[in-house]
Amino acid sequence: MARSKEFEESEVLLKAMYLFWEQGYEKTSLQDLVEHMGIHRRSLYDTFGDKHTLFIKTMEQYAKYANATIKAEAQRGRTAKESIRLIFDYLIETNGEQPLGCFFVNSATELAYRDPAVNELTSEGFNKGEQLLVELLQQGRQKGEISADLDPYQLASSLYTTMIGLRVLKRTSADKKKLHQIAEVSMAMLDK
Image (cartoon, rainbow, N blue to C red; front, side):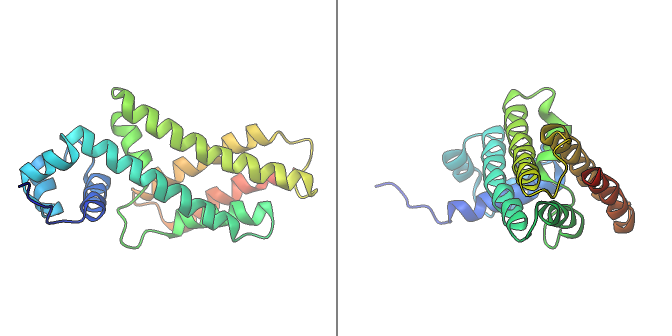
């Protein structure tokens, strides 16, 4: 008779995600994972496969979380500009119990250039974030809030690049005032 699992898969996966997010892939050992997740090494292998497979599963979980969170922030805005500002504010102000920065940005800078699976997941995540901005900008153009002369695809690309940069800066000693100033410069592009 097979033994039943003594842990909730989604809970230990979340623990692994936060550990990878905080330490990165290379600095996280299997022993770190076993201790942090509170499961046996055999259970880790049986449930999640090897370290790399577990890492990819944590990235997939993060993608769902990040997409839902950013969309929820954007939906709070009454206008396209307000929605974009809310996203900037969220990226700058929010951390709470989370490690610093963005799990995708951290993973992309650490691994994407040499790990096709990480590159694919981070690129897909970045594309979804940029696409959300394109949709907001198109809505803003339709309502006359954003000039029809401005290309929503180019603007979204520029705004999203700034958002990625802010996530990197959040891992440093940059203060929030400076990060908000950077966001303001990007937001000013929408006023042209």
